[in-house]
Amino acid sequence: MQLPGVKPTLLRRIAWLSWSKWLAVPLFSLLQYAASPWRSMFFGALVLSAALSVFLFFALRAWEFSLRRQFVREAPLPRFLGAKLMAQYPQLSARDTELVLHGLRQFFMAHLRSKRQFVAMPSKVVDAAWHEFILHTRGYAQWCQAAFGSLLHHSPAEVLGRDARRNDGLRRVWYWTCKEEGINPRQPSRLPLLFALDKKFGIPGGYSYVPDCRDIDRQSGSGDHCGTTFGGEGGSGSDAPGDAGGFGGSEGSGGGADGGSDGGGCGGGCGGD
Image 1 (tube, rainbow, N blue to C red):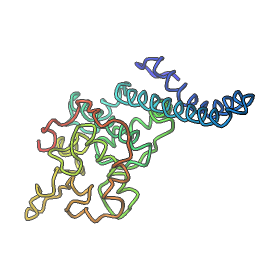
Image 2: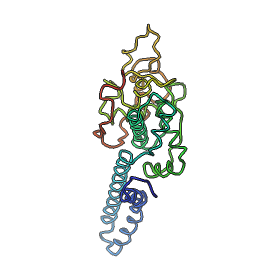
Image 3: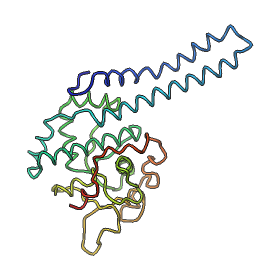
Image 4: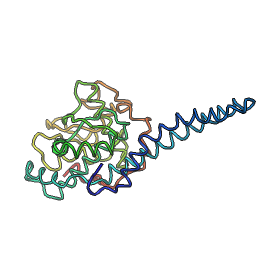
C-alpha cells in the first residue's frame, strides 16, 4: 500500500497487527500441546495458556487501534480536496478548507472510535469534501483500509429524523466528536467543530446547530438544531427514534481513552460566528 506522506513503517505495523492478533488462537493450541507431557500439571497449564492467549490478543488489538487513531489524525488528505471545496463554495478560503478537512477527520475518528459502527454525516460542507475524496476511488480505499480495515461507505448529510439507525449514527458522531474536544456531550458548553462548520461558513442548505436547546429562540422561527437533543435532553429531536440515552450505544462502549483531544476544535468560536 502506498499513501503519499504516510510513514511506511506505520502502514506496515497496522497491516501486521490486523492479522497477527489472531495468532493468539493457534498460540493457545500450541501451548496446550506443549503442556500435554506434564499430565499432572495439565489443568494449570491449560488455564495459563488460555490467559496468555487472551492477554496477547487484546494487547495486540489495543496497539492496532492506537496506530489506526494515529493514522486518522496524522495521515495527509489529498491536496486537491481544498481546491474542490473552494470551487464548490467560493466563500471559502484556503484556511477555511483546512478547518473543513479537520472536520472530516473528526468524522472518520468518530467511526473508528464507535468500533466502526454506522455513522451519519451532520455537515453539508464536510459531506462535500467526503464525496470528493470518495471519487478518488483507489486512494480513498487505501486510506480507509489503513484507518478502519474496511471501506467506509458514504451516507448523505442529515439531521435527526424518523430513521432510528440514522439517528443513532448521528448520536455516535456527536458523542465522539465531543469526546475528542473535551466537551460534555450531555451538557455541551460549545459545539464540536464538525457540527459548527455549516453555520460558520454560511453553507447554503447547511445545518445550523447551537449547543443547548435553551439557546434557541422559538419565537423567532429559528431553524437551528441543538446538541442536547442527541442525548434526549429536550428539544424537538429529543423523542426521535433510536438510542438517545446511550448516544447510539457509544456511552460506556470504551472507544479508546477520552483524553485524546487533538486541539482542532472550535475553542468556543466556531458555533456562533
